[in-house]
Image 1: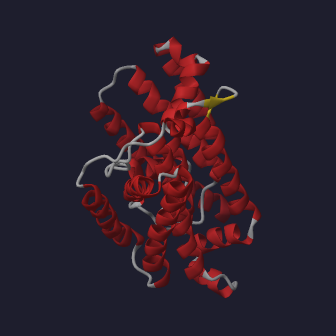
Image 2 (image 1 turned 180 degrees about the vertical axis):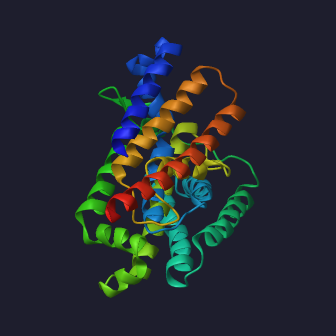
Length: 311
């Protein structure tokens, strides 16, 4: 899977560079990463949720409401630090709501997060009346509009640390092993003394926290807190996860490395299409096509693995 994605990445890079040579410049590559930092962080949360066999289509709404909480808290406190803490706590609470419904009372993750998607979005719109919250200090631009050693700060201080922490969590801890066991076979996991309810609960909390971090980056990027800031972002995160080999139907399969490469592919594709002047409508259509191809590819890969195992 990772080798195939690496080949796709190289081919895509060559094609885009041939169409637009300016794409090869370091500035263009850094801008590409900078523009997609929020989606990168969100896809890490979606990774965990889909590994346990679930899906979270509310993360875009979590970003929106966390943005509003950030903006409102700043208006009350005048502190960016306090606002960041408030947004992260709000993201964790929204993740807890999803985790409780899916993990504790066994609701379908699709139905549960579809419901909370509407609820969180409605609350964000109600609080703001659809008016963006602004007035943040210029120093807040440091997170998303400034660089350190030539690397965008949101990549250096948000995306990279989040990725490292997720690598450790998924591959070096008992909780990470429980995620894979729960997604692969929840019944067998219970017999192996895995608390599947708690595992599912906490993966949704993680998704909520990472979405809130994405909201903070978004607020710094736009220097406003919008009630529709995360609209549509959940589909990009799902596409990236499935392109990376995560199966929402079966769970327990896929890797963080595949998601990372998938993130770069989607980021590069979106940036390349934008630089080529392709209309947003067609960019969305291409993203949808990639999602369909990813599902087919996952099914083919799984069949090949099962065939080899039987042989």
